[in-house]
Image 1 (spheres, rainbow, N blue to C red):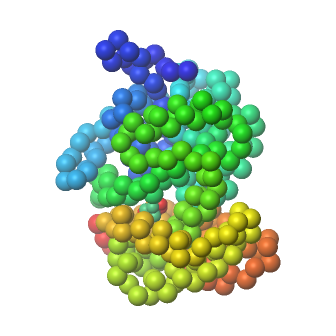
Image 2 (image 1 turned 90 degrees about the vertical axis):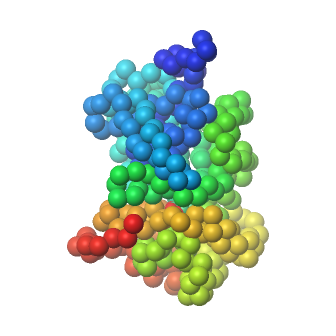
Length: 322
Ligand code: PAF
């Protein structure tokens, strides 16, 4: 399966495709390259390489990757395609690649926040191995000039169906583990995704509304009160969806941990607001509210937040913090 374009000491390097040149796309490009994995950025532009400056621990590094237009039919064989676009762009970003990915049976690894993306991708690729990488790393663009890596969280790799054989999961897991980022291979990715969903409901929503860093929420007594309400409502939905007991205190402490580890970060939803871009509310709070309605549960806090996070198109921000 490995591509043969790049070699080191006569050894072929495995090649991963990256779809989406946002903060998470570049963060993983940078770490995969450190693990001696060749990367290929798939993009709308027709350029053969792209680069970006990464700041980590006060050190600046240049990260350069080969690139290719995503509808180019001469896509090389990739060991995996990491999909790092926003949840709402996944479908349209994958469409130009659909035929080639199916023909080559390239495994797809989804990195999005929220839930609901897997089902959309499965519809496009009925037989493809699809894996999920749920991560809580912090990174944001500083004045659009460089990517600042602000916190290393845990990442979980798993599948929501039987499309990926164990051997494939193990290979991809080893590659991700080689990046040095903490990664766990799990048989219960759904539970992780639900935990992360409640983390995103709590951190992303308040940081986007208050335009603050994740860590500022920890010092704010109001956020703790709102998080309790989010978790109280969200856990009821989570219990019914997962058909298992969920401990609210565990989720609250997960939220604290993620906010602490990524305290210098502006969450993705806060960044979307700062840059007047659409956000992922439909896949985060919107998803939770739809599931709650399906179970006839009343979730007033989640509903209100979901409505508040649909910022009007003309609510542009003149001054944005850095
Ligand atoms: O969406 C985000 O920003 C991230 O999922 C996280 C972990 C909340 C860090 O900011």
